Amino acid sequence: MSSTQLRLAYKARPLVAVVCVVPLLGEAMESALDFAEIRSFSASDGDIAGLLRWMRPDALIVDNEEDAEEAAAFARDHELPVLHVSVHERALRLYRHGSWEIIGSGEGTTPTVIRNVIAGALFSREGAAT
Amino acid sequence: MNRTRVLVADPLRIFRAGVRNLLARESDFAVVEAGSLEEVLGAVEEACPDIALIDLELPPLGGLAAVQRLSERCDAYKIVWGLEPSPETVLEAVRLGAHGFLRKEISSGGLVRALRGVVQGEAPLSRDLASSMIEALHGLDERTRARERAAVLSTREREVLAFVAQGARNKQIAATLVISEFTVKRHVQNILQKLEVPSRRAAASFYWTAFGPEGARGVATRIA
Image 1 (cartoon, rainbow over the protein chains, first blue to last red):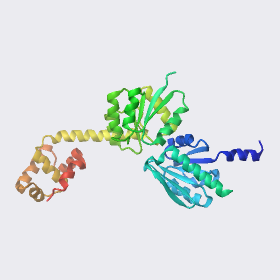
Image 2: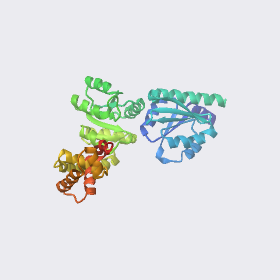
Image 3: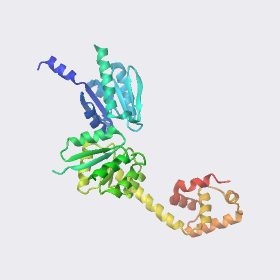
Image 4: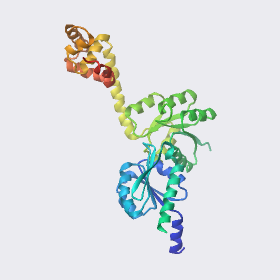
């Protein structure tokens, strides 16, 4: 496989990083985002900006406030969509184009809604890049 | 091969999906899902699971009520799980019949090991919860002993002691209970004697151990 083919194959499956305090969230994302390559990391590892700088994912999912804010600072400069899944508040918020947008609450934290939000964010990001 | 049937009772689909996806990779588990107590009882009606993993906040009455209701209907091992549970909650869950308590922050591998352990008769308890539960148990013992000691007090003496615990002076207690200051003084002397404590401050401390803040709450608003 040539490097171009390899890159095309890679791009066929967007890379989504999941950084979470609750590891089961990563498990849920693997089944919900079956169109993407999922890489899960423990939130306790810290330095989320460093992780994003080296990993260069197409989207990021976090489940805690601190990581969400740290990631937003990086995302602002790199047009990276960040989805904050708050399991405590049962709410979703999406960071893109420099600001946070509340997606929903209660039933909003379902795998289906998360899949739709991430797919939408990836699609619009891809559209903006081409 | 007989699979271990795990009922995942959690209002958040994301947690149910997480457990389902995790256990789907293992050949020895089968997962059933429920999002509320009603769905739990419906699932149990069909077949009793081997293990029920019950969310602490399962609607409508919470996970502890679900443990009780489930205990009445089938012999499943009941494991409660939650985010940041207090030691008292863990203790209460065990007292009501839960076989274990896990934090939702548990690792994927940790959850699989815990569930396998349950089938082999182990009681899963997140490590930090075990020590805080023992502390809560000690606190409960102390409270029980203090309450037994408090049984020697008359109703009026206990009432006076509640005021003393709130820092009320004899004059205030007398005015609130509409009795003479002399009578309050006599009650306080009797309390110290019966409880075998040396001072008013020690009596107040005893009250807090026996009844805690909830015992004194009603009294605080009544002080004249």
